[in-house]
Image (cartoon, rainbow, N blue to C red; front, side, top):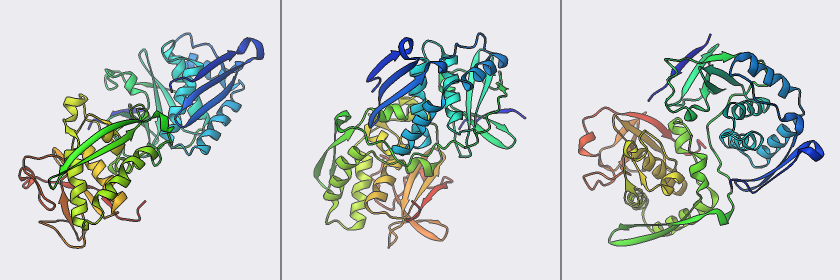
Length: 399
């Protein structure tokens, strides 16, 4: 059964080709925290399918599967293990390797076929489909992912990995037809969870100046940020709130911000320290709605929020959560209203009118600018009579 469902809601350090002399290609490019070196046997270079149809794609696979591709895949898997790459970051490595073998701009179909082949041979259950003149690339995923198409096969959900390359595609009107190719070793599910960011090289960082006023005193920050963060998350989908909130900061960014925040709140009570973090998140950044900023809903991780010129309530909720978790490690809930998300923290003593969730009292901590100067425990007037749902609960020890 095949069913399409649309759920709405550095570059290159060095390249050398030695095919004519040795029968192989030597590739070398910068990848996050190190230089990646790869040797590709000449047999791996397969001509592009003459037509975008199942028989041609199967013929391409047969030729590539008979090539000496194993050392290439082994090298990539060893690199993933050495640098502890989550699946999403490993997929970025696959994209870079495919780009070296078959540049995307020269032949998109061939480039996509290499990505699919490398992901499949790395053990992931990846699939191909054809929608008119478009090749669609999916991977098995059992997480709650929003805003990208998926299809179901035998109760398994396959998320589209390349829909960003077809921004105007209507997969309802022109449903993709699967290309049936059996790859016995391709059984793993793909995860979008990011629990570790690369240790980027320190020289790759830039400094962003931030400031905000608290209790008549202005605080200044020089936060180190890496432009590669934007690249990593450029096509990252809308993951569930647990995965989203727990995307960490990279090492240099963490070191330039968290110790200074801890220093600034040293000597404050827990309540005042959380209030400081709430107001830092609320006032140290410019606000703009995602529709105006990106033309669509886009959740920014904590580090993306630090990097971005503008951010909205989702982004600030993620940053505030990360700061409170890292500095105080207090229980929290994310509270979703029809057009807004805010945070609530469980203190030893309730502050203001609490939100009761699973028998425990949480005090609202609004990290996004509002018309009112909200204190801890105060909810914006416009939200008081609206329904809400708790979309994430954090208890210390969960991670």
